[in-house]
Image (tube, rainbow, N blue to C red; front, side, top):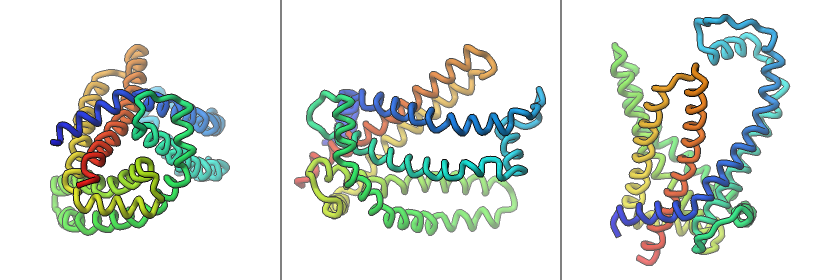
Length: 287
């Protein structure tokens, strides 16, 4: 099978199970609303007495930054809340990943919310452990990125104009975009082995590394193709959004819809990527 066949298979599988993106979007929206409400209340209580100029010289976000720098204890009472929020976000991400992989790899086309939640519970422990075991790979990723980007940092540090600095920044971003998929695919494949072959976590990592050793470049290339498509579509989306003005109620409503559509698009992209990886896994595991 060629790259187009794997991409088509991934798109088809994601399209058949589009409900998964809707489930993810609804859960994320509900959780975000629950988490944002107390913070919003604290900000309104702390900043509600301030008088904002009608035509401020700084954007609203920069005004907030200035206030937080002057009043560094403004949200101190919410430190524990933020810490718990981060931990809950990790737990939720692991749970949702379990549901997503479980339903995407399930040969049955029909998906349901109970099935999604059941898969999240079934794979939660092993997916959490797989995330912990991915930390050493993450450390290697940062080390490799630091070594490869060192010449760019040295070049920008010696620059006498801003052009080399900007160019070095863009090249570092490209390097990051090329390098991250090479490591992220390890975690994805380990989770595919966990779901598809019911393996334990360490055995799944061993199988994933062995599989990648034989198929690294095709898998990396497929991941980069999907990523490139996401970047192009995101750039088009951003260009359209820049044409709309948030000052107009109608345009603001369209921007909000566009924003939520983009979130749904990114979730669907994750489905496509898992579908592509699983399609390649199904074809190449016996080779």
